[in-house]
Length: 221
Image (cartoon, rainbow, N blue to C red):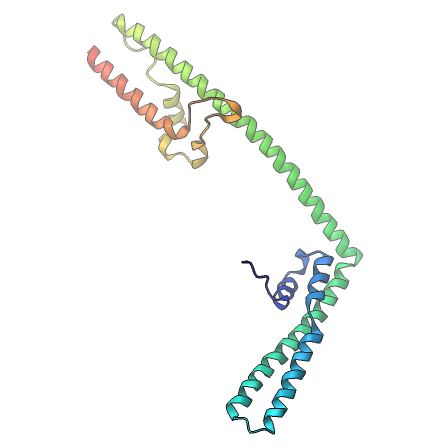
């Protein structure tokens, strides 16, 4: 179960980077700092210490209370210091200059959001076109294979020796297995399409076709 951090930790974190927070956030953090409760704890422990000093309590018991009193004093001092610093930051955050800076950041965030939406739309268009091109490449390769079979049957050399996938691999200067991850997007069903392609499987197709052509040339010889 999640346990929220103590108010002192929240306030200290905000003070380290106040520009990240709105004035109302700073005010909420300041309101959570209970200076009265911290000082009351100090008074209670001090009274307990004085009682032990005039009683038959052991030194160990007195030292234990004094350790608690020391920690309580530190919490009270820190709570007061944090509250004072937050009050200054809240005043600065409510200034016209600070308000203008926040509005400028909000406007920049809105512009970035619009750009990201535009990039997504463009990416969507390109991915759809990529799936279409892969379908077209497959149809072209089938036509090439069919034409080559006819030419070989006539006792001539192959009409085309490089496939579109092979040309793509040559253009990229690396094998398809070495392409960056973005080239391996699975395109099955993209935008409702039933494309069977993915770049991750293209290398296998290229190797299979190359092997088949080499066997066919050997048989023809």
